[in-house]
Structure formats: C-alpha cells, structure tokens
Image 1 (cartoon, helix red, strand yellow):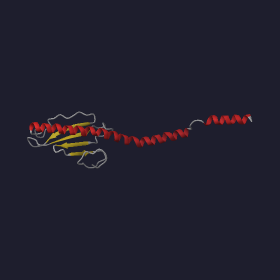
Image 2: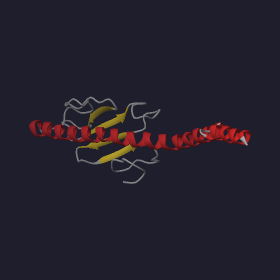
Image 3: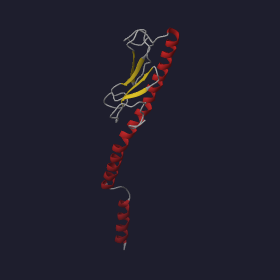
Image 4: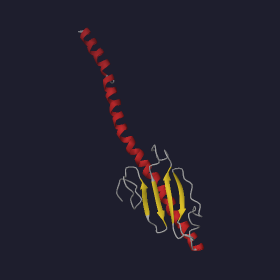
Length: 156
C-alpha cells in the first residue's frame, strides 16, 4: 500500500511542466506568425514615413507659389528651383524649372532613400508641379505611374 502511494506521489511530481515537443511547437507557431506579421508591419511603418514626403512637397509647392508671386516666374530655364528643398531622413527632394525663360513651370520630386523606409531599394517617388498635379512615378507594388500620390496599394 505504501509503495502504491509512493508511486502515485512520484508520478504527479513529474506531470507539472512542459515537454520538449510542446515547446518546439510553440516556437514554430511563433516563428510562423512572425514571418507573416513582420513584412506587413514593415509596410505599415513605410506608409507612415511616406506622409513626410507628401507634407514636404505640399510645403515646397506653397513656397514656389510665393516665389512666383514675388518674381512672376519660377526661375531661370532648365535650372534647379530657386527655393531650397527640405531635409529629410527618408526622402531626397529635388526640383527642376521648366524650359522656357522666364520659366512658368516646375516639377518638384521626392525620392525615397534606399533602405530608409525599411525596403532594400528606393521604391517611392512622388512629384508635384505648378498646377498642383500630383503623380506617383514609382511606388512599391505599382506597375505604372499614377496621377495621384499612392500610399497603399495600386489605386488612387
């Protein structure tokens, strides 16, 4: 009787805890969920950084219009714009004045810095011109240029 009781106590003593198989299954499930969630989260973070380019281009457009009001042109033909572009951790900004003298047009561009948005290449490029026409010349996942600023997906 005492030996049966001792066996029962010893069996219950080792039941508490996890087996190696249970731990391996848990690690595998967490790994699978991480492999699915991490790319989605990276794209989510990139979309948040894209608004930096949109805000900077909109601000730059206002400054160019102020320059136009003061000078009645956007600058000399085929040169860089007279207004300096903003600095950013994620995008490089440039501006090109139109071909006529005095110029009545410009195109401001924001191009993503390679790796700054969590991607391996410079996958994003946005433009705005004197008519406030916005385009996405290059966007991750989009195959063609769009006449809007893409943030998510392939449609405006």
